[in-house]
Image 1: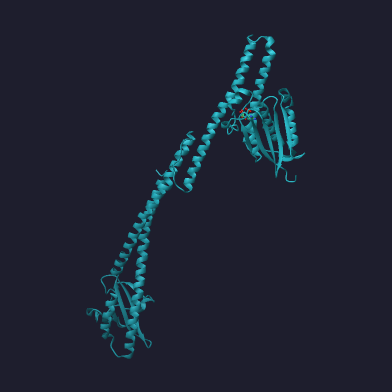
Image 2 (image 1 turned 30 degrees about the horizontal axis):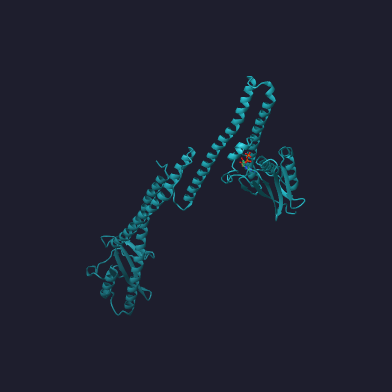
Length: 467
Ligand code: ADP
């Protein structure tokens, strides 16, 4: 029953209400009554003491009899709402605000049994029919007690006052309790409902529905949580989409060489290809397996770059690395009459980077430059010192990259339409590997290209601090 947060809170509120009202009923009733009794008794005692002091003077001066005090008592009683008496030491009521009491003798009257109590609650030696709050102040002087001033207030009056105050407390408590339901409502709209939405969304995401969006407008922690979840879902969605295209690309790129390998092998087996043509077709088969190897290597490299690439940074001469990379393409370039023009701003230029990875960057860029260059052309490679960096550029005068493809060439498996016809061996992974290696170094790469004119790839590498 209480599995919902909201229900738990409602149950808590009801329990709080019941306990709250019980506390008020028990505690406030007792405390208010005690307070009223004490404060009334104090003020009555002050009055009684004042009257007692007045009669003490009179009694000492013997100017008057205590019995003649009735007139003064009447006004005192009227002011305080009490019955006021003057009792002589023998317990006879010498004066009172009501005539009927005068002369009555209080049996067992023993003021010494009061033990310093200023007031009593009871029937005052059985002289009243109901409980009264009674205070007695002695009339003293010259080491003599002439009598006592006694003021009696019916407890019913104090009880009525207590009830009136409790009434106010109850009304205030009810209003506060009702107002506190606003908090419950606020909790429902601001926390409970958004939480339910978030739980529902999380279930949707778990079921693979990444398109589900949480519509929470709150500008607080709950809103931030919803935004974060929406962001997470969009990222996961994009990742899912990427994985789908990745698998589609991989299977497509693997299938075509595999299909041609299978086709040629079958043709060789069933005799469609005569043995004297085997060398030619075996060369095609080797080229196709090379392509498969290149694809697998590329994917493995990207895999290592994906999970936080570990770079082994050393100081090395970039000019030398460029020279060595260019030299590795010598055979290919000679066949097509392609030459290199290398320009360096200094004889030796040290950079701080992962040598193996930078060799791969240069290899991929030069490989592309050769692939997309016309025969008998020149490839320009420069390494220029720029403040604390060395800027490297690989430029060709080949077919160039169409404007609309320029932002996409960094994507995995992307090949422009032109290259599909010209470069059948390409995997579309080369530039994405280049970009990720440079990003791992904290550097970037730019391309400037015009279709039919050529392309230039420019990137920077940091120089070691001391050089
Ligand atoms: P590929 O293995 O196909 O070369 P890359 O990722 O290296 O894959 O390159 C992606 C695409 O970018 C190529 O298919 C090609 O269309 C284009 N490209 C890269 N370098 C050049 C260049 N130097 N000249 C023209 N096009 C280029």
